[in-house]
Image (cartoon, rainbow, N blue to C red; front, side):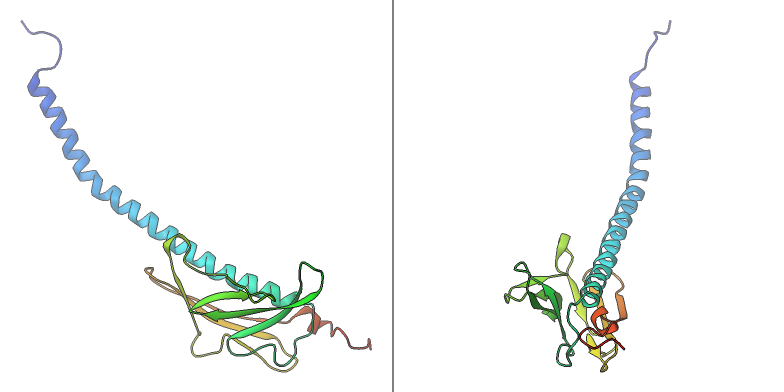
Length: 175
């Protein structure tokens, strides 16, 4: 007469089948988790590259003073913005140690790109072009390449910005 329930052999067989299925599934799950992590890192890198471009573009466009000829050089761009005291003060965008930085009128430097979440971004010139250049009376051209370390690929940024103060020719008589 047979008793209801599992025999030891049936329980071991079920345990063995479960272990075999788990062993077959774990590499696929680990590969999927690695791909998701890599995708998140690449997305963060692209967001950082475009954040820097958008921030610099917006601040140059909103500069409160017309661009003097010495405000733009190969590796820096000086803009005028209202400080906490309400006065127009110079702020400078520059690349230092392969990182975008904003130099405040006080001399303090604030990084715009850096080692967030363990990723370091190298900001380098795009195809030998200077980071900033400007023709007299023309737009400020911005060109750079961001290369995240440890991630495949890079992000090339090229744009041109015409400050609104230049567009509206602030300080000139209305024609």
